[in-house]
Image (cartoon, rainbow, N blue to C red; front, side, top):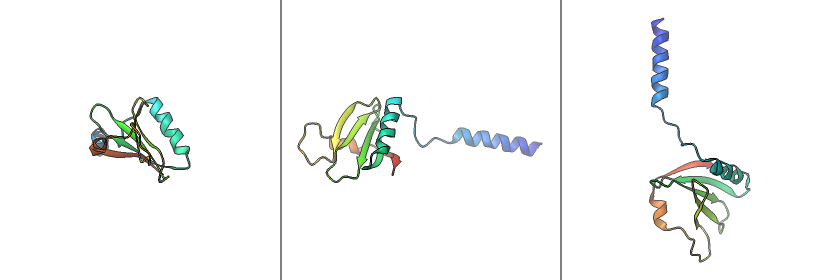
Length: 105
């Protein structure tokens, strides 16, 4: 009986100390992620841990493709990997924050 209680206690203790690999996303971002996964050129989605404003970078395989960066409310922030000149290009410092791969093909 003591060993069962001990194992139960250890299970609860271990479960309470582990952290999920990713925080839940907003419903609109989950929809955007699900739609991106269906795209033939999708490669991965990277969460940029910008303090107070996490960002999501949708990376595609196309060499001169349009890779958008969005905030957690699905608002457009900037574009990267675009062979064009645009005022909507990402500030390079955005990519200095810690990053986590949310999904990868």
